[in-house]
Image 1 (cartoon, rainbow, N blue to C red):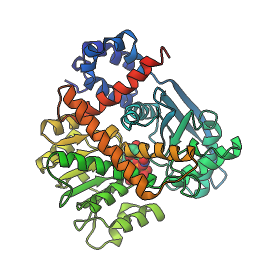
Image 2: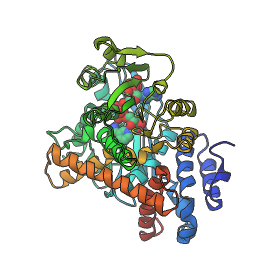
Image 3: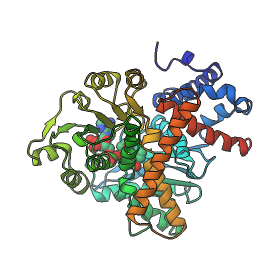
Image 4: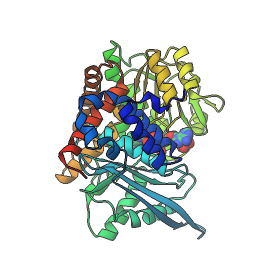
Length: 453
Ligand code: NDP
């Protein structure tokens, strides 16, 4: 039986899933994200009959608006290229659409919709007033000059600016979109609109409306959440061996926080392979290689004594106590989960969005491994983006310590909420169900209150 078999859903939700399949052919990632939510919210169907009467399930799986547009730009040799831009404004029941922009060659409508759908419930879990959206382009920033990146961002924003605003839709970064790209995007928005709308984008530079701790937020937040999970099992990061996949924004700061809490990060990766460093990843060197010089993890290995770059097999082959997938969707398949289980992994918490396949999640949960879905464990990034919006509205800036302390509290609260929802609905210890139930109910009640929209 396939893990996305609709007969596993509550009967009321089977037709909802079928309509998603029919209306969105070929959008495998979107199907997967919807299925996972529908699978776990079954217990709500009987308890809240009004949701069925109001077609709430049918409405929540349909984006409020989907925008696709042409992005023409010229490279340094004068050659013209055309990419496709996306912004999916999924749900504004709780606040302005909020979610990142991804620039990666694999981006398509299915990927943006899966990310936008998950974002609704993640943003709800933060307890902050933000709706869900996501965007991006099938543009590959790898190997491009700064001038090419700038021209692409300017062309992308020339269209996107019609659709966004501090009270409408507030994009941020994601894969391939960091501080440099947010700067170029913000500059073009300001130039076209003639407005310094600081609150239109988050992840800005610290001298022009950015928030302290936003760069660190997703990675730090992930580890704060995982630390709560460990505490619930009577243990901590101290002395734990940790494997972190990826070596981008989320991975770097997750690795840094693990080491601050006494764990040892023995490996990080990129799409060409992984580096093993049993003495513990040197965070300052990793930041210099990836953030300053924009090189690869293989360069880290060649500059660090005792580190080894590996291209065979998978980073998940390494025995560890904690695994933090922080690269991309479906990067941890069931075979990898089985290897991790055999090697005694105790906890898997997602920094990336949907990195663990449904089969892998089931294997981890059946083996008693503590497993956290990204919509709960990586919510620290968007939460701190919402804190950036708050600071922009108040034309103020909080210190690093104050912002980090708020982030920490938000992650503790999300952990409490997810555990409580799982307990209330009779699935104690199931963080997936807990996150989906707690996130869904808040959005659904707001939609009921706001009428048929
Ligand atoms: P970055 O672009 O900074 O880094 C992405 C990392 O993942 C790189 O090391 C990249 O390697 C690797 N990667 C990307 N695609 C693939 C692939 N197809 N196969 C193998 N490795 C890959 O992105 P972020 O760190 O910002 O994002 C990582 C994940 O975290 C994504 O799933 C994102 O949606 C999620 N996330 C990010 C948030 C944020 O605040 N930035 C917030 C919440 C979730 P390479 O350089 O070789 O491509």
